[in-house]
Image (cartoon, rainbow, N blue to C red; front, side, top):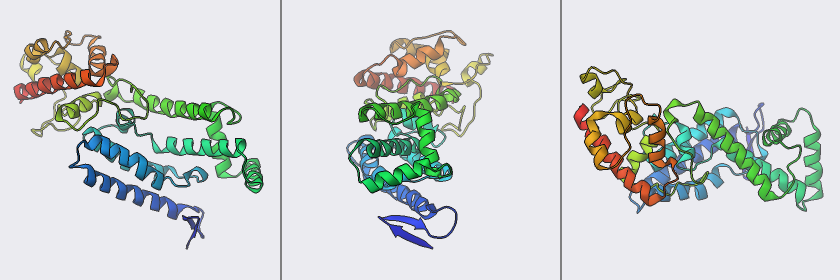
Length: 325
């Protein structure tokens, strides 16, 4: 049995009072994702259109009143999976790409961090603004309860931020909550070898200014995400898997296939690399990963420069795929 209060579904029976609401959140997110992808596919720039619609229309509807809920990890994971579908669409990434890439280049904050930010700012408003005395009394009573799950969630949030109370200016609290979200993303990034060359965003949780819907930028985004379709992590266009570079194998060399090998080391595209003035390093050179990281944006190159580099990367990868076929 489900009741409704202020637009929120509340489970009258059972241990999880917001189970119905969680199901509705997931269904709403899926509907918005499908609609946004459908509406923006033929627009002027699907990346910008999809990002704007998701942030300004979908997220407010999906996370309505989430600041006063204890949302299950299962529901948050489902929401992240849907959000990653939107991020993949924005960045032109394959299904096998890591979710972290969506947070880095598409600027889509993970759902648990979105909820934590909303919760933290909600608590700050109660503690620092002139609020209803009854609401303040209820809040204080809940926070004194040792067994209340929402109070435990708020205390865990304060511990993650590193403060006893969410006081100070609202801008400071917002910045601290953002730092926690950034830390969570970086921790996940460090655990993924496929993202070892991916540079950090110029602006956190913003659509990166180089992103558009061109084929060249799609190639750049896939290289940054460590999933350029070489055949090392998923089948390539020919349906083949390659754990080692097929061109180097033909020369009797066993070299692990990766984006930095193809773009920085492999001799099959030396002519193109020299023509486009792309840095070249010897095979298995310790500087190869750093050189690729720098070339794909780690040197803080602007959008125009990254667009030019994306064109070069697209040409080099296309040439390598033709040679290695």
